[in-house]
Image (cartoon, rainbow, N blue to C red; front, side, top):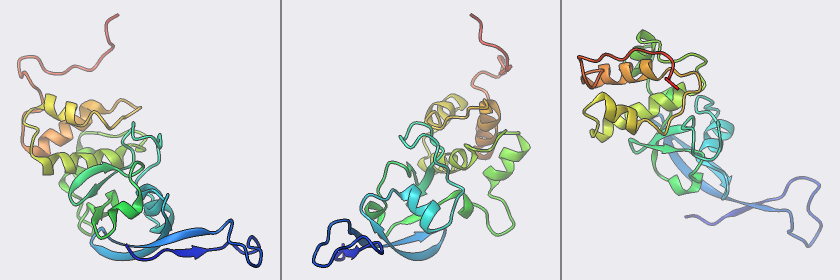
Length: 192
């Protein structure tokens, strides 16, 4: 890592004193296919860098504790919670956000499947769901709808669009949307 630079906010430094100064570190990321350079403090998360420094607001800050998945992005094709990783830890890596999934005006197949299956309602979790599903496909471990549900369980949808999400993901992956075709999923209330 390169040497840090000290930034002193205007009007906060006293001559001969460096208290109040924040060190920044140079950082190079390839975000959605475009190489970008930043200078950030050591405590800046990847999520905050994406939203506040790169202007990519598709990734959401839901819980800021890695429990909801709204901040999920792909680093090197693998899904991570961007609120839990420091930006400087990802120096030199490829990052894909929801903004980078489409190919120009052509939606990624998962994005189109989410539309086709009504896999979102308010949309807050959608960017994380989409990135997580792309990561799931890259991992190649899910072979059933049950495995999709389990491996996507780190992404919370407060609106309850899970049946549509599973239908969209399984359709794009080419696997059956239900674990037991003789017992199709029927949404409803949970028995007490």
